Length: 301
Image (tube, rainbow, N blue to C red; front, side, top):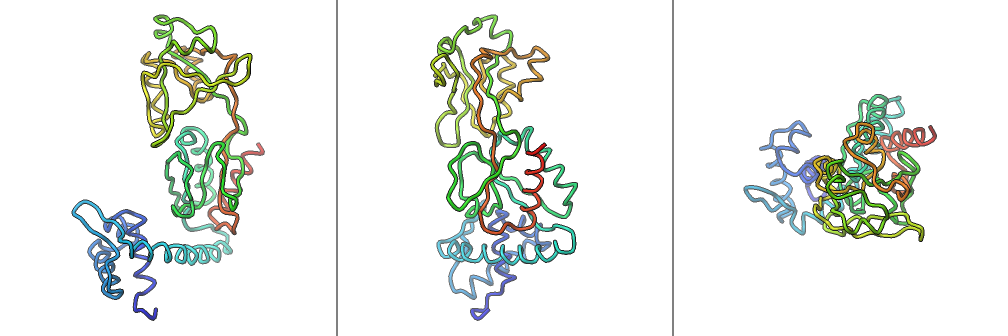
């Protein structure tokens, strides 16, 4: 490059940012952490400006470093995608698939799809980032995202992933219901203790209940509020008799069969659209195209 900074050195800087440190980047690149640090220092010397702000516990991009990485990262990703496209012509998909997903799909929807993907494409490294807010997957360096009922940007396309429809359900432990009684109507729920979930830095997930008047939102007494990052742990608190839980019906079937949890107002359980995989409408890299094929096949069965 005319400015003296090589593409290989820039790839090391991008790896440091992606992996969150010199050691992690070194492990990914097969380099010693000291060599990674030296490479970043060389970039700074050649550009005449710091690109990383280092402390004993963390590192962060400077303003100049952010401009550099924001411009360089897509270019390097494009080079990687081009090389993987060529490799795929030989019959084996290679590279990395990075997905941004909510915790709700981590329990029973995504594992089976990823297991099949790994069987078909063992040369692909899969990385999953779990968060619930709608994010710019391109800016986050992800190939695709999964969300429930989100309004997506115009340059995104989406396909169903997992069940087309899912039902939400209410359940509680026998001990809780013995102590507090079984609700008879949706309105009775306001007098009961609830295990609720909160979006990251946002509102509580609503309790939408079907009634004679249609769908209504119920506001019970919140005795335990969990982050959606702990979505799968709420059942443990319900087992312990902390309160009534509102979650996916398919997550509760084993408990209903075992009697560890009891259905609450099953005639009021609403349905919702299942999750969707979304990704940029531009040409998808080979690892993502292969994952899309698996998702489409699974949704047809």
